[in-house]
Length: 326
Image 1 (cartoon, one colour):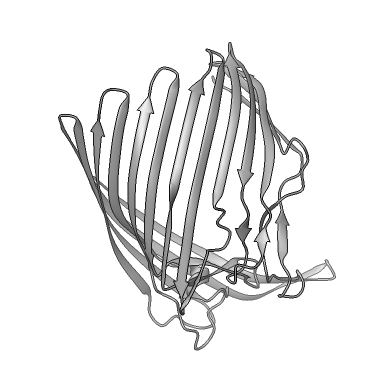
Image 2 (cartoon, helix red, strand yellow):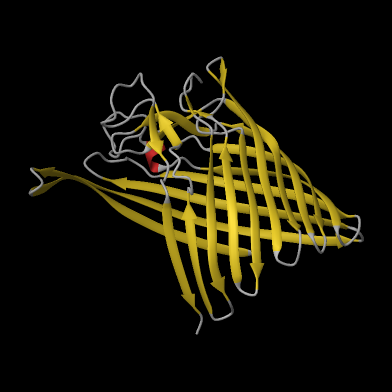
């Protein structure tokens, strides 16, 4: 069991530059967010079964100081329970199932409807998001194989989801929807071919739907398939790894008519490491492919709202990391 507390404040200041020489400060506001949480976890082993439970309580408080007064602080109280059971066939194989409820408060941007300031007569969106998550999975571990598969179903109420727009200060806009769900499968496989070579495969497939105001559509920037495939050589300190990353297309508007195209890129890691020293070169997007990580239909200084606008992923990039252990 444990207890934690967080106290946070941040000043927001509007700055405008004239002729790239003179700057002046306009409005200033400050947001305050305080949180208290406590939790208790319990695990009991009964033969081949393990039963575990988790119960968390969170209290969140938000206040604001600016030209327009908030009036009174906004408070949320959350009780998040989780219960799970694991059955072990033997030392290498097990199945598990769990159900848990989680809740979260809207962000400051969500509260103010995408604005950075509180304006008179604005309707605060204080509705919290709630989700019940059901999971069923299987794990296998042996000397040369690691495998896990997990089925999940997430039943949302008042989900805070992207709306496809961008606020004046460049923050993606969200809105609360009536009902929604996400379901799918996650697979993680590692296979040790030899003492030096390891093959890795990770894939997730997700189907998501939102129902709001009598309409049904898929959420924004949620690809159905994400797949990573890797081949790694790691022996006597020498590391050589090739990784492919694939994302299927994803919608960028609520009408589900515009998408970011699917893409596959290749990354690599090459280096040497031991207990005292490591030097790793990470190369991203080996083929220097043009691809888009996300997009929107509206945006500050990006043109008309009826055309898609895309955010380009990194071109061919290099990162060199060194580490010394004293």
